Amino acid sequence: MKFAICNELYQDWPHEQAFSHAVQLGYRGIEIAPFTLAESVYDVSQSQRQKLCELADSLEIEIIGLHWLLAKTNGLHLTTPDRQVRNKTADYLSELARLCGDLGGQVMVFGSPPQRNLLPGVTPEQGFDYAVEVFSEVAPVLEECDVTLALEPLGPEEGNFMLTAESAIEIAKAVDSSHVKLHLDVKAMSTEVKTIPSIIEDSQDWLVHFHANDPNRRGPGMGEVDFEPIFAALKGVDYEGWVSVEVFDYEPGIDALAEQSIRYMQELV
Image 1 (cartoon, rainbow, N blue to C red):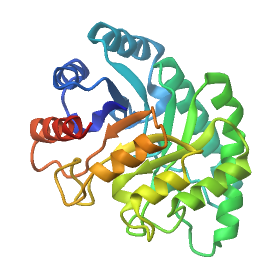
Image 2: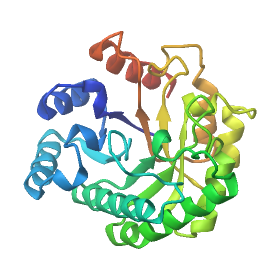
Image 3: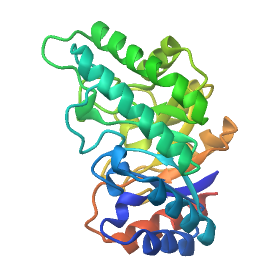
Image 4: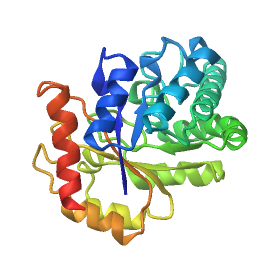
């Protein structure tokens, strides 16, 4: 397992300072939230993309991909009945795939609950079909850029669509692309009936990316979840991808969150 950290944790830190801090703590990868680069992916210039690659290379840290793909965007939605909006969403995700490829990343985590949740009057079946349609339109660009879209199940407190690993896998199966797979998140899996190790085992053929966090919205080891059986399950399915720290409660401070998370994970492995 390789440890990475999501860059929005660093809030208003310059990229050089954030990347350097992650390297000093022992992280080998950094995961980018597009809104930390610009308001819109279309505003991230080729020059800016190149400078980020050069920075990562100089510090010997890998930009592993993107997450929070549609956060802070306007007019985009995955499961809307509005075909024009779905087309815009597919176009935006396609440009995100190009950004990801330009940065040397290989995975895009699709969470974005406000932009995927079922709108009033939309049935789960319709939402499923709309999602498959959008992801299918993006698939050729994913393949061209050699980027995998990793569908992220989220718990019911986040919304009403794609709440379990099984439901995400069903969507991926319907898209039928080798570049549309599954992402798992400890905070989200904690809401499922099945145990986290069971979810990992049952999903192993689809799993390409993993977020480490606690239901208390802080890092691994900073709450009640015991990660030892979780890491044992990942090892049991021969998972060799990234384990990326994603937090939502910044109250302990950037230094504490980043350092305590990786120290805890290093102790376990």
